[in-house]
Image (cartoon, rainbow, N blue to C red):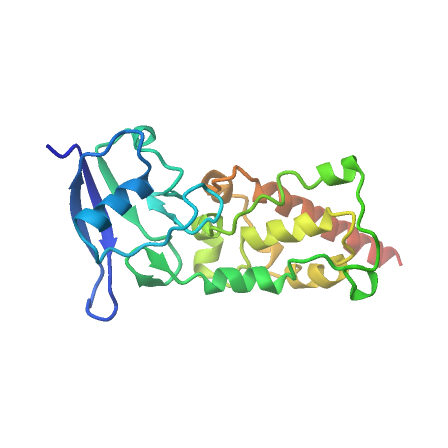
Length: 239
């Protein structure tokens, strides 16, 4: 007898006029992940089911989806942690659905590209100095560099849903480089985020923190960026 009911969002724009949900019954081990279950459904029940996955180790971020109303990585979400016999799986909210559980993440990656996610040294040459850091300088990056670009935080952010907001993941990246002793790019990145739809669009709702599979805190990074911007504005006025 099937122990779990999986209700999965389905949509193929080439033949479906509207999205719909389809039920699948499965009797997995409680040690299985949601991704294991999706693989089993695709391999044994419905080969047309489409979703992204790669590393299966919580590193690539490709299997991010909405599981029982919360954004998470399917490979890290275990059946015994869900505590429900009915599991509803949908694509990440906010993004355009390409097919089934696959969404178009181009807007997400465009925002990341916009903030220049690389070391900017004096003169624009990333290799203009040795790049050595003290242990203390390196420690400042903990909790900032671990983002795996899964898009879960940005998808969960209400400000991103209705506006041109750059999103928490991109702003976390800005602070990651601003905190890096090797980087001198604040003067290039801060004008990009010092806008209504930049850092000031964050309303500290904390959805991004709750949905991050790496337990990072974009809200804290955003608040520190706001402080840096405010200090810069005061400094400019004094000058």
